[in-house]
Length: 178
Image 1 (cartoon, one colour):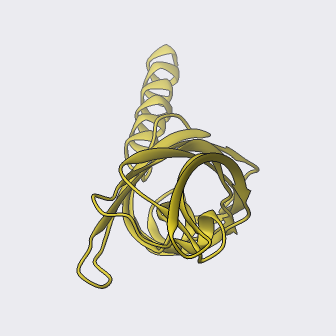
Image 2 (cartoon, helix red, strand yellow; image 1 turned 180 degrees about the horizontal axis):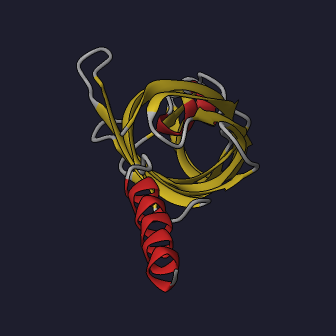
C-alpha cells in the first residue's frame, strides 16, 4: 500500500513537471504601428506566468534617409486563460542620422533629428494559449518624452527647441508562441 502511494506521488509530480516544461514562454510576432512606431518584428519572453520582456526592431527608409527603431519593453499580464490584459512600460530607441518630419511627434512642419529614446507603454489585449501557437495583441501604445525640434520660422530661420510631447498611438500584432 505504501509503495502505491509513493508511486502515485511520483506520477503526479512528474506529470506536473512535464506540463510546466511544455508551456510556451517564447513568442515571435510582427507588430503594425505600436511600440516600434511604423512596424516592428519582435521577440518576447515570459519570465514568469505573468511577467515578461520583449525586444523588437524596425527599419524604414523613406526618401534617402533611414530610421531604425528598437522597442524594449517589460510587461505584466492580468487574467487567466488565453485572453489577458497586457500592461507594459519601456523605451523606443530611435536611430535617425538625418532630420526629417515625423508626424507622431508633432505637426509635419516640425522635424526631429538625431538619435534618441522615447518612453512608451502598452495597455491592451493579448491572446496566447499556454501551450503555444497563434498570438494576437492589440492595444494603445502611447509615446512620451522630450523631442528636439528644428522649426523653420518665417521661411528663413532654423530654430531648435526641446519640446515635451505625449502622443496616443496604437498597434496590432500577430505571431507564434513556442
